[in-house]
Image 1: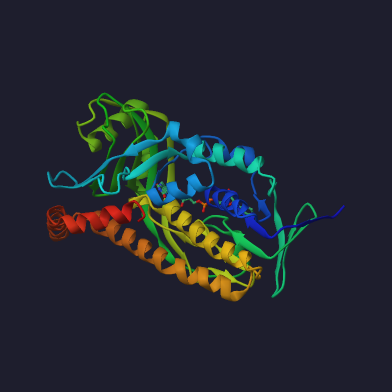
Image 2: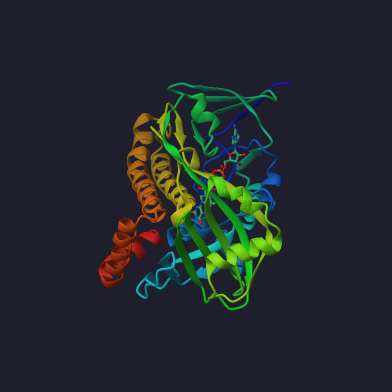
Length: 393
Ligand SMILES: Cc1cc2nc3c(=O)[nH]c(=O)nc-3n(C[C@H](O)[C@H](O)[C@H](O)COP(=O)(O)OP(=O)(O)OC[C@H]3O[C@@H](n4cnc5c(N)ncnc54)[C@H](O)[C@@H]3O)c2cc1C
């Protein structure tokens, strides 16, 4: 039997971006339907997403707005200082908490925990209808209405479809929206470590020949999260090492400042690529999150960018709704695209250049970047700019 659902907005993809967006839109009184391919209960398992995310202060504002920050606080590790170093060179760039802003530079949260809190809030929100697992069969976009047909014969009619269905976005492909970018010859190896000495809430980014190695402080002062970028051709060999040898390899790369280390919670890997959608909009349709922009994790900014997309979108849509206007017109959608494309492009280019500049062992490039670190370290105003950007101000 056919089932018909009416909503103001259909959010396709219930990952971190789609879930945060749905809760933010519901706060403004929108009726939302979230369509997720995978059974929602699976999404919160550690094995589904074992990563830890560095959230910027601007993201904290949005998560506070949707009333979930208080539930996360107990599990959050604060980043009060960031040290960037170049391989074995003693030079390092040093960012400290800006006392004027009075906030940590970032907040570390396990994705599985963030997902758990998001899902429980989505489920109890009367303005949100979750359809999962769901498979989209057809999307019909016209000037005055958007229609989605699911394989289980559910028809959804709405004013606007927002695709937050990830970097391999089904809807982006369905609408033939092209992308540009490239694969990095790199894989991110993710794990956690227990260490002898406290991390003192300092995040370290060590630039090694294969790519950056990030050591990020978790809530427990003797636990850190690792994002180890490795060349594609070597990653498998590292991933297959037994526990003892893997710990030894990682320990050699980290150095001795944390004392002895031991990995826990498994090892996971993510192939890396840069991918940017040529456009973010179509008739009654918006791309958001990784579906619109997938970038190198070198600066931990992918989800922070998506949350900035969400912030911009709720501003525009709530304003439009307040005046009783149609939220799906080209004028409204173009406003979103104009606001978000340039910021996303800038961050994508910055992370791409940083990765290329630092994953290179040529003598002259090493000299230039060591000079760059030295200069940046000695110019407070430049450092302040970096800090403000990192926290999303
Ligand atoms: C190693 C690594 C470390 C990172 N660290 C950080 C960090 O520290 N800070 C930071 O800000 N960012 C970080 N990022 C980036 C961040 O993880 C991503 O930007 C973010 O997870 C993207 O979320 P998303 O919801 O847009 O996409 P996804 O997580 O891909 O979610 C898409 C959702 O859509 C669903 N879906 C797919 N197709 C369909 C369909 N046809 N119908 C319905 N649903 C569908 C999927 O099942 C999924 O649930 C990191 C990324 C990597 C790879």
